[in-house]
Image 1 (cartoon, rainbow, N blue to C red):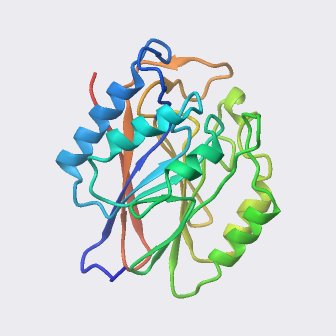
Image 2 (image 1 turned 90 degrees about the vertical axis):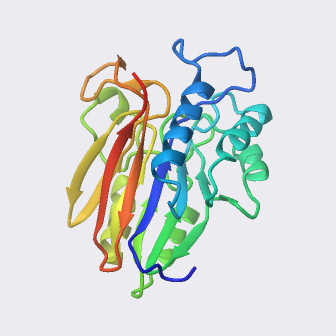
Length: 254
Protein backbone atom coordinates (compact mmCIF):
# COMPACT_ATOMS: atom_id res chain seq x y z
CA UNK A 1 0.00 0.00 0.00
CA UNK A 2 1.12 3.58 -0.63
CA UNK A 3 2.60 5.54 2.25
CA UNK A 4 -0.13 7.77 3.70
CA UNK A 5 0.62 11.45 4.25
CA UNK A 6 -0.73 11.14 7.78
CA UNK A 7 -0.16 8.60 10.50
CA UNK A 8 -1.63 5.15 9.97
CA UNK A 9 -4.60 4.39 12.20
CA UNK A 10 -5.55 0.82 13.14
CA UNK A 11 -8.21 -0.61 15.42
CA UNK A 12 -7.90 -3.85 17.37
CA UNK A 13 -10.96 -5.96 18.16
CA UNK A 14 -10.40 -9.08 20.23
CA UNK A 15 -12.08 -11.93 22.09
CA UNK A 16 -15.53 -11.53 20.57
CA UNK A 17 -16.56 -15.07 21.68
CA UNK A 18 -19.45 -15.42 19.24
CA UNK A 19 -21.82 -18.41 19.26
CA UNK A 20 -23.48 -20.16 16.33
CA UNK A 21 -26.64 -20.43 18.47
CA UNK A 22 -28.00 -16.88 18.96
CA UNK A 23 -29.56 -17.87 22.29
CA UNK A 24 -26.19 -18.71 23.86
CA UNK A 25 -24.61 -16.26 26.32
CA UNK A 26 -21.19 -15.81 27.90
CA UNK A 27 -21.59 -15.11 31.62
CA UNK A 28 -25.07 -13.86 30.79
CA UNK A 29 -23.86 -11.48 28.07
CA UNK A 30 -25.06 -11.46 24.47
CA UNK A 31 -21.67 -11.35 22.75
CA UNK A 32 -23.13 -10.60 19.32
CA UNK A 33 -24.96 -7.57 20.70
CA UNK A 34 -21.86 -6.15 22.40
CA UNK A 35 -19.80 -6.68 19.24
CA UNK A 36 -22.42 -4.80 17.23
CA UNK A 37 -22.11 -1.93 19.72
CA UNK A 38 -18.34 -1.90 19.29
CA UNK A 39 -18.65 -1.90 15.49
CA UNK A 40 -21.11 1.00 15.65
CA UNK A 41 -18.61 2.91 17.81
CA UNK A 42 -15.74 2.19 15.41
CA UNK A 43 -17.81 3.26 12.39
CA UNK A 44 -18.74 6.49 14.11
CA UNK A 45 -15.30 7.54 15.35
CA UNK A 46 -12.67 5.56 13.39
CA UNK A 47 -14.17 4.76 10.00
CA UNK A 48 -10.95 6.02 8.39
CA UNK A 49 -8.81 3.30 10.00
CA UNK A 50 -6.49 1.52 7.56
CA UNK A 51 -7.21 -1.95 8.97
CA UNK A 52 -8.83 -3.84 11.83
CA UNK A 53 -6.72 -6.34 13.79
CA UNK A 54 -8.68 -9.36 15.11
CA UNK A 55 -6.55 -11.07 17.74
CA UNK A 56 -8.30 -14.34 18.43
CA UNK A 57 -11.12 -16.06 20.31
CA UNK A 58 -13.41 -14.69 17.64
CA UNK A 59 -15.64 -17.73 18.09
CA UNK A 60 -16.48 -19.28 21.44
CA UNK A 61 -17.81 -22.60 20.14
CA UNK A 62 -15.61 -23.06 17.06
CA UNK A 63 -18.63 -23.60 14.78
CA UNK A 64 -19.10 -22.35 11.25
CA UNK A 65 -22.20 -20.40 12.26
CA UNK A 66 -20.19 -18.23 14.64
CA UNK A 67 -17.76 -17.27 11.86
CA UNK A 68 -20.66 -16.48 9.53
CA UNK A 69 -22.03 -14.21 12.26
CA UNK A 70 -18.61 -12.57 12.61
CA UNK A 71 -18.47 -11.89 8.88
CA UNK A 72 -21.97 -10.43 8.98
CA UNK A 73 -21.29 -8.06 11.89
CA UNK A 74 -17.82 -6.96 10.83
CA UNK A 75 -18.90 -6.61 7.23
CA UNK A 76 -20.04 -3.12 8.22
CA UNK A 77 -16.37 -2.08 8.59
CA UNK A 78 -15.04 -0.96 5.21
CA UNK A 79 -11.39 -1.80 5.84
CA UNK A 80 -9.10 -4.86 5.64
CA UNK A 81 -9.76 -7.34 8.48
CA UNK A 82 -6.59 -9.11 9.65
CA UNK A 83 -7.41 -12.15 11.77
CA UNK A 84 -5.40 -14.60 13.86
CA UNK A 85 -6.71 -17.49 16.01
CA UNK A 86 -7.23 -17.86 19.75
CA UNK A 87 -7.56 -20.97 21.88
CA UNK A 88 -11.37 -21.07 21.45
CA UNK A 89 -11.19 -20.85 17.66
CA UNK A 90 -11.42 -23.71 15.18
CA UNK A 91 -8.35 -22.90 13.10
CA UNK A 92 -9.40 -25.00 10.08
CA UNK A 93 -12.82 -23.37 9.80
CA UNK A 94 -11.45 -19.95 10.61
CA UNK A 95 -8.80 -20.16 7.89
CA UNK A 96 -11.41 -21.27 5.35
CA UNK A 97 -13.99 -18.65 6.22
CA UNK A 98 -11.79 -15.64 7.00
CA UNK A 99 -9.41 -15.60 4.05
CA UNK A 100 -10.48 -13.65 1.00
CA UNK A 101 -9.86 -10.29 -0.63
CA UNK A 102 -10.82 -8.22 2.44
CA UNK A 103 -10.41 -10.80 5.21
CA UNK A 104 -6.87 -12.04 5.81
CA UNK A 105 -5.93 -15.03 7.97
CA UNK A 106 -2.57 -14.71 9.78
CA UNK A 107 -1.01 -12.37 7.23
CA UNK A 108 2.16 -10.38 7.01
CA UNK A 109 0.62 -7.04 6.05
CA UNK A 110 2.72 -4.09 4.86
CA UNK A 111 1.29 -0.60 4.93
CA UNK A 112 3.51 2.40 4.32
CA UNK A 113 6.71 2.09 6.38
CA UNK A 114 5.12 -0.44 8.75
CA UNK A 115 4.90 -4.24 8.77
CA UNK A 116 2.07 -5.95 10.68
CA UNK A 117 2.92 -9.54 11.64
CA UNK A 118 0.07 -11.79 12.81
CA UNK A 119 1.22 -14.96 14.58
CA UNK A 120 -0.53 -18.21 15.51
CA UNK A 121 0.22 -18.98 19.18
CA UNK A 122 -2.53 -21.60 19.59
CA UNK A 123 -1.77 -25.04 21.05
CA UNK A 124 -4.42 -27.56 20.03
CA UNK A 125 -6.84 -28.42 22.88
CA UNK A 126 -5.05 -26.16 25.36
CA UNK A 127 -5.66 -22.75 26.92
CA UNK A 128 -1.99 -21.75 27.05
CA UNK A 129 -0.09 -20.70 23.96
CA UNK A 130 3.23 -21.47 22.30
CA UNK A 131 4.93 -20.33 19.11
CA UNK A 132 6.17 -23.46 17.34
CA UNK A 133 9.40 -23.57 15.34
CA UNK A 134 7.64 -22.51 12.13
CA UNK A 135 6.09 -19.46 13.80
CA UNK A 136 9.40 -18.46 15.40
CA UNK A 137 11.13 -18.78 12.03
CA UNK A 138 8.39 -16.70 10.41
CA UNK A 139 8.90 -14.10 13.14
CA UNK A 140 12.64 -13.87 12.49
CA UNK A 141 12.24 -13.66 8.72
CA UNK A 142 9.35 -11.19 8.75
CA UNK A 143 11.18 -8.89 11.16
CA UNK A 144 14.39 -8.94 9.11
CA UNK A 145 13.53 -5.76 7.25
CA UNK A 146 15.60 -2.68 8.11
CA UNK A 147 13.31 -0.52 5.96
CA UNK A 148 10.21 -1.15 8.07
CA UNK A 149 8.96 -0.62 11.60
CA UNK A 150 7.06 -3.62 12.95
CA UNK A 151 3.94 -4.28 15.01
CA UNK A 152 3.63 -7.92 16.11
CA UNK A 153 0.22 -9.38 17.00
CA UNK A 154 -0.66 -12.69 18.68
CA UNK A 155 -3.35 -14.06 20.96
CA UNK A 156 -1.47 -15.04 24.12
CA UNK A 157 0.43 -12.53 26.29
CA UNK A 158 4.21 -12.91 25.86
CA UNK A 159 4.99 -11.90 29.45
CA UNK A 160 3.50 -12.11 32.93
CA UNK A 161 0.67 -9.61 33.45
CA UNK A 162 0.32 -9.92 37.23
CA UNK A 163 -2.72 -12.22 37.35
CA UNK A 164 -1.63 -15.65 38.58
CA UNK A 165 -4.40 -17.60 36.88
CA UNK A 166 -3.87 -15.87 33.52
CA UNK A 167 -0.09 -16.10 33.75
CA UNK A 168 -0.46 -19.89 33.84
CA UNK A 169 -2.19 -19.83 30.43
CA UNK A 170 -0.05 -17.27 28.62
CA UNK A 171 2.70 -17.90 26.07
CA UNK A 172 4.97 -20.70 27.33
CA UNK A 173 8.03 -19.74 25.26
CA UNK A 174 8.08 -16.02 25.99
CA UNK A 175 11.89 -15.91 26.17
CA UNK A 176 12.34 -17.21 22.61
CA UNK A 177 9.77 -14.79 21.23
CA UNK A 178 11.18 -11.78 23.06
CA UNK A 179 14.69 -12.73 21.94
CA UNK A 180 13.49 -12.55 18.33
CA UNK A 181 11.86 -9.18 19.04
CA UNK A 182 15.06 -7.85 20.63
CA UNK A 183 17.23 -9.18 17.81
CA UNK A 184 15.20 -7.50 15.09
CA UNK A 185 15.63 -3.99 16.44
CA UNK A 186 12.66 -2.87 14.36
CA UNK A 187 9.73 -3.94 16.53
CA UNK A 188 7.93 -0.93 17.98
CA UNK A 189 4.92 -2.68 19.51
CA UNK A 190 3.53 -6.08 20.50
CA UNK A 191 -0.23 -6.54 20.76
CA UNK A 192 -2.41 -9.38 22.07
CA UNK A 193 -5.85 -10.45 23.33
CA UNK A 194 -6.78 -13.40 25.62
CA UNK A 195 -6.68 -11.46 28.91
CA UNK A 196 -9.99 -9.52 28.59
CA UNK A 197 -8.48 -6.41 30.19
CA UNK A 198 -6.29 -3.43 29.44
CA UNK A 199 -2.54 -3.87 29.92
CA UNK A 200 0.37 -1.58 29.05
CA UNK A 201 4.10 -1.86 29.63
CA UNK A 202 7.39 -0.86 28.00
CA UNK A 203 10.32 -3.23 27.54
CA UNK A 204 13.57 -2.31 25.80
CA UNK A 205 11.82 0.52 24.01
CA UNK A 206 8.96 -1.70 22.76
CA UNK A 207 5.34 -0.98 23.72
CA UNK A 208 3.48 -4.06 25.01
CA UNK A 209 -0.32 -3.93 25.01
CA UNK A 210 -3.17 -6.21 26.05
CA UNK A 211 -6.69 -5.21 25.09
CA UNK A 212 -10.19 -5.57 26.59
CA UNK A 213 -12.65 -7.99 25.08
CA UNK A 214 -15.69 -6.84 23.17
CA UNK A 215 -17.73 -8.82 25.70
CA UNK A 216 -16.93 -10.02 29.26
CA UNK A 217 -14.05 -8.36 31.14
CA UNK A 218 -11.68 -9.97 33.68
CA UNK A 219 -10.56 -8.28 36.90
CA UNK A 220 -6.87 -7.26 36.58
CA UNK A 221 -4.10 -8.42 38.92
CA UNK A 222 -5.92 -11.11 40.88
CA UNK A 223 -4.88 -14.67 41.71
CA UNK A 224 -8.18 -16.29 40.71
CA UNK A 225 -10.67 -15.83 37.91
CA UNK A 226 -13.07 -12.95 38.50
CA UNK A 227 -15.40 -11.03 36.18
CA UNK A 228 -15.00 -7.26 36.06
CA UNK A 229 -17.85 -4.76 35.76
CA UNK A 230 -16.03 -2.62 33.17
CA UNK A 231 -17.62 -2.13 29.77
CA UNK A 232 -16.58 -3.91 26.57
CA UNK A 233 -13.83 -2.21 24.63
CA UNK A 234 -11.34 -2.14 21.79
CA UNK A 235 -7.98 -0.49 21.06
CA UNK A 236 -6.99 2.31 18.68
CA UNK A 237 -3.40 2.58 17.42
CA UNK A 238 -1.66 5.37 15.54
CA UNK A 239 1.50 4.33 13.66
CA UNK A 240 3.79 7.15 12.57
CA UNK A 241 6.40 7.35 9.82
CA UNK A 242 9.21 7.89 12.33
CA UNK A 243 8.48 4.57 14.09
CA UNK A 244 6.73 6.02 17.11
CA UNK A 245 3.22 4.91 17.88
CA UNK A 246 0.39 5.87 20.16
CA UNK A 247 -2.49 3.85 21.50
CA UNK A 248 -5.54 4.11 23.72
CA UNK A 249 -8.51 1.96 24.70
CA UNK A 250 -12.12 2.90 23.95
CA UNK A 251 -14.97 1.55 26.11
CA UNK A 252 -18.50 1.07 24.80
CA UNK A 253 -21.75 1.14 26.74
CA UNK A 254 -22.46 0.82 30.48
